[in-house]
Image 1: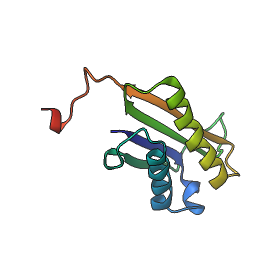
Image 2: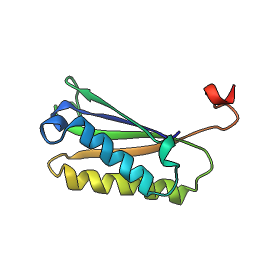
Image 3: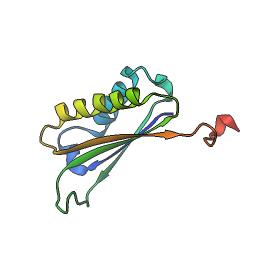
Image 4: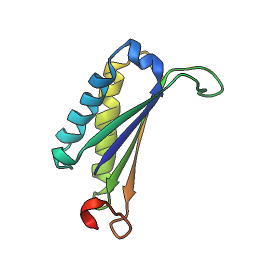
Length: 114
């Protein structure tokens, strides 16, 4: 925990390597101070087929899934931190977005909680 899943147009890989983008998101998540670095998980899904507003426009969206317990202000600051950095990295991308969803502690399960 947390999980950062990057959905994006594959054209992002013309600008930066997948490893670099993953590293950037990891560094940002860690710098937020909200997570233990060893718990941060980041992965990418580059798409070759997609439509944005019924057109083929480059995009990147970060789906973040975190354990409940952070304030709305902390979650908003995390989104702003990541989106700000992505705008710097990808100034030609018009569609740069992120959302933060929470896992419910009562229903979350993993190997270590069994």
